[in-house]
Image (spheres, rainbow, N blue to C red):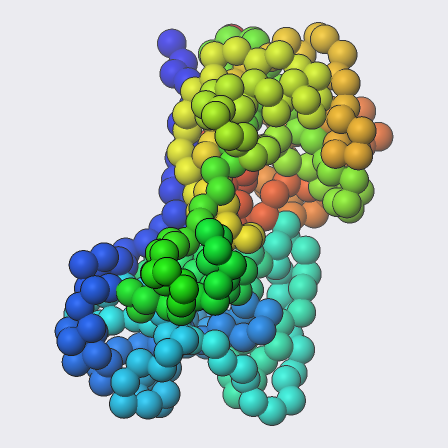
Length: 335
């Protein structure tokens, strides 16, 4: 008998080997003492970081390049194999050469190249990095956004300063401390009720997406709401479907700007009409397993489905949605 499908691999941005070393954030003597052997990940104004062409590791810099002690804006990311890693803002120098390469959703994008290094963004390039680099980049991006949007105390509006080497802020007026925010969001693969894993999956497209680009449904958890309750509400609101048998699959940080995506699977009756949320969902359709497999094998190109009147492109490699769809597509329906 077929088993309910599970994620076959860790989502791209959930891969990390770095020890965050929380206790070290309040141990300045230790961190400053190891600064001379540390490595720094740079993030430019567009949240891009350098990688050497043809390599899977980030092109980090020696910490001493930036002074004898950590600069005020330095953020401690963690330790790996005896080396401390930090992030700092930094811009490339000179005029770039633009290099075309496959990016988010498999679409060809342009990356600037300086002296043999490509400056890449996390969404488009995260899946090509090794586990350590993917984890460092994801953490650095999340903290970067938080510091850019949390410059004033949420209680009294006074300016804040960084403490704990970037992992907290303290307001100047009364010493209130704030910590990085993460907003929980659900993302759910809904399949039909045939067998254990269904034979069709429900995909949808937002109005701002290009024609043919589809993914599974997602939405933010509201105050006082359970994850399972959010799944049922979001699917009902977005496409008018009632789901059952909601079960958890896995999670992925998604720092665009500050989410954690919590992946679920659920079942719904594919024979009932769909009612699309105005302004949120442009199209929604049930897609057969064979068509989803064909889309995976088509390497990011538009893939005809059904009678050939429609085409689909699946989510990019950095998204948990792609891992979820792959796990479902290559599972047996159990019918």
